[in-house]
Image 1 (cartoon, rainbow, N blue to C red):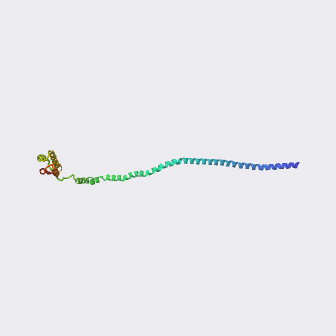
Image 2: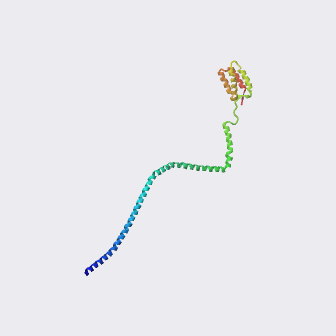
Length: 225
């Protein structure tokens, strides 16, 4: 019996020793393995969430880009249309730049006003005006022309009436002949009067004798003026 008790005690002691050795190892292993599993699970869940959030953000960005693409293209087209107007603006800006040398020349001319007035303004203009008058023919004496004397109108009127008071000349033509002969000879010249008398002779309105008497009367009353 004693041997059995001793054997049992040894077994219990050995079991206790084994259990004491096993328990810490098992507990430490269980604790160490559980902690990384929990941390890895937490890390995995966070990574998954971040991945999902990134996917959602990328999808939202793609949607916004797809929505904004037509509006951007529509906005770009009028900008392309406005580009050809740029050279016109440049041309307008260049024009006042070209006027600057003119202003400089004007200012330089204003500085030398007195010299130009004495040389160009006074003498050449008067000289040119005299030349223009001679070129146009308005100045100076005009050539004299043979015309009827205005002071001898009454003498002509009575003498012409006596010549035209003839049966061969119709009464309806007498007043016309009297006025036309004097008007042409006094305003235009005696040559026009001679031509008028010859035309009326050809038209048989007056005879040859009356035509000769009228021409002699006109010659007697002509003067140069």
